[in-house]
Length: 84
Image (cartoon, rainbow, N blue to C red; front, top):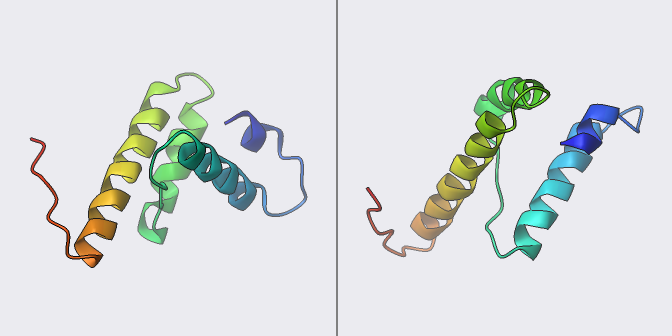
């Protein structure tokens, strides 16, 4: 979050910040958080809200990790357990 707030580069800050985020997720044993183009504006909105409150952004990323895992398992024909 802090990386993207300081905008250290002229271009590519969002891409680099998502790369860093996904690297951290993987290092901590989680799945990637793929943010499809249709959710890009939601990602930006939650990121902007994170200046005041991290929780909505964290929840958004957690949901993306969950949905990414479901999609990868679907593509690999692995049944995904119903967690509800």
